[in-house]
Structures are given as C-alpha cells and as structure tokens.
Image 1 (cartoon, rainbow, N blue to C red):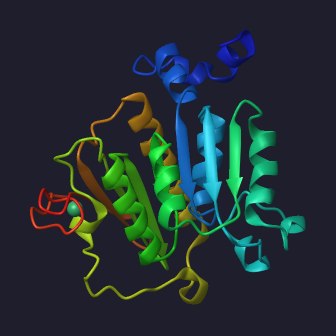
Image 2: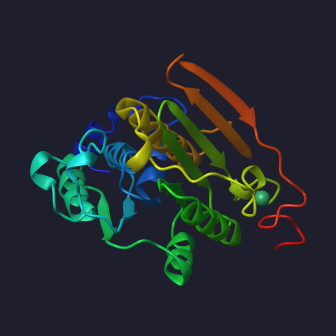
Length: 251
Ligand SMILES: [Zn+2]
C-alpha cells in the first residue's frame, strides 16, 4: 500500500484485529455481489469504501423511479440507465482503487458457477428464491462463503453460511428448495428504505469479516430484524444432514 492508501484505510488499520495485514487481505479479495437493488447498493458501496480489491456486480435491470427511495447508488438522473452502469459511476467515484466488473445480466447456469468459482466471497442481494437457490448451489459446489440478505415490509433477514467449512449449513438447510415458500417481492409489497440499507450494510460487514478472518460467525447464522419493534433475533442454523444440496449424500 502507498501512503495515500495507508491514510485512506487508517481507521481499519488502527483496529488491532485488522491492521495492515487485514487491509491487504481485503485488497487481494474478490467479492461477487448478485443484485444491485436495495441490498446490493449499500453492500457494494461499503465494500468499495472499505477497500475490497475487486468487485463484480451483476444485475439485469435499469434504474426505475421507484428504486430511488432505497437504492442509494442511483441518482435522479440515473433513471433509465442500466443499474450496473450507474452503480459503476458511483462506486468508482467513491474509491478509484477498486477494480469494478459489471455485468448487465441475471446470473444463472454456467455463468453463475464460473463467477462464484472465481470469487472469494459471495453476497446474495437478489430478490427471488430461484436465484437464491442457484447461488447457494454454486457456493456449496465451490466452497465459497455466502452472505445472503432479504427484506420485505418491516421484516428483514441476514444469513451467513461459511461454506469453506464442509460442516457448515447452507441456505437450503434453512429454506429447502422443495419447501413451500411464498414468493413476495418488495416491488409489490412495499419495504422500509433504511431497513434495507441496514441489512445491505450488514452483508458488507459480514463479508469483510469473512475475507479478513475477523469472524466468530463460523458455520451458519441467521439474524432476524423486526423493524417496527426494533427487535433483533439471532439463531444459529444447524446443518441438515438430509439437505438435498450440501449433505454428504447430495454432494
Ligand atoms: Zn444444506
């Protein structure tokens, strides 16, 4: 790191658990952020500001006026632009050190597996179960840590699965693929803007901890937020020995 970088990241470096070594680990790391919406915007912004070395962001959509209430990478004049283009401009201005790779597509299949294989940490900031399950499968397959977020109305979840550890649970242990889960999206249900921001920021926090090794979130953890009552619940997620994705039989 040069003098300017030592200054830029000095408030990380001052942390005994972080130090220059932690910042270097962050600088060498590649984060994959899937979805540049309410969760992906703050997650990507904090990862960039924190000094992640390489950041890949994938989202197929264009910026819509209804996004601006919570998707903080975009400005009023971003409406109509591909989200990844508007995101790149904001992130590059925030921290030109970060290598940005933007993909205007909904990741699936071989594309998704290849990108997950090349990442050190995966942040699922998508808004639908089919993407979440596909991302989870790719992370299990390649042993990549996965930080998943979800938010709707006044309820939000943060999930951490350190899939580098074969004994860790996966997203499917918590929400089986064949399970009956009602698909609700904030495009129709409404969502409290700062709550989405809080969860996205927490996804970045967990990602930074996983990449630098400052974590006691080993294995799997689920954090539930009820934003109306400001109540948090924390649940340790057990591995499901029968899980169709990560159990010994499934692999
Ligand atoms: Zn599993």
